[in-house]
Length: 140
Image (cartoon, rainbow, N blue to C red; front, top):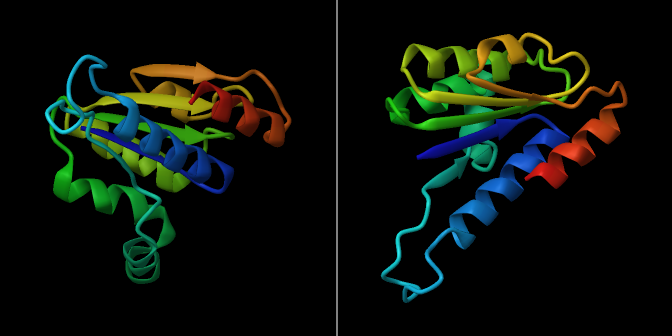
């Protein structure tokens, strides 16, 4: 399974990626209902759960808490953070690393802390947040 997450513009990118990967990843020669699709989930999309965790446990835990119940070894976590330093994103990646999940980080600037935590780091070497987010959206 693939889990995608981010804040603000990165949350929109995470939702878009999850939608496209869930819908468009089956073998073209297979009938629609018989072909397996990738299992992809954006951790930004359930606002009731998101806000409950933020309210009760702190915003820094909104992603890690969701992963605690479902993340397994060999799953993939794609963490998107333009700065690479968002505490809630970093906490999710730390949990993923502890569970031996594969981690991918998309960031900007100099990569931030995220680039040093993930298995695969893709850093957009730019200092304009809007341009970083636009490039991340194009990558998705």
